[in-house]
Image 1 (cartoon, rainbow, N blue to C red):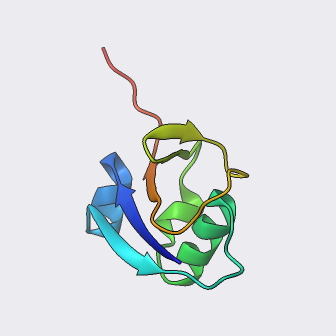
Image 2 (image 1 turned 180 degrees about the vertical axis):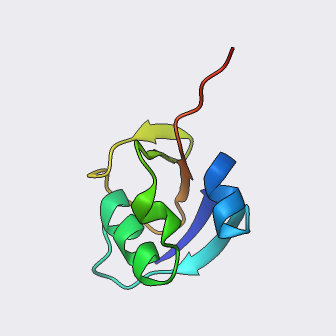
Length: 82
């Protein structure tokens, strides 16, 4: 399964990249499993981010949301404005 992953705000800074395209093993089927797999691949900032938000194809999603080939997954910390 191929996905496009986007990182925003502090995650982008900590990981040193705005995103990446990846090929996943077949057993990674949810956003949460993707996050855990990415942490195991050296993206530790995803595992330590508090109140991590995510979106699948630009729709807000929870960690139990299903993912499929070709999806765009975005991870970002909560943002406040003023």
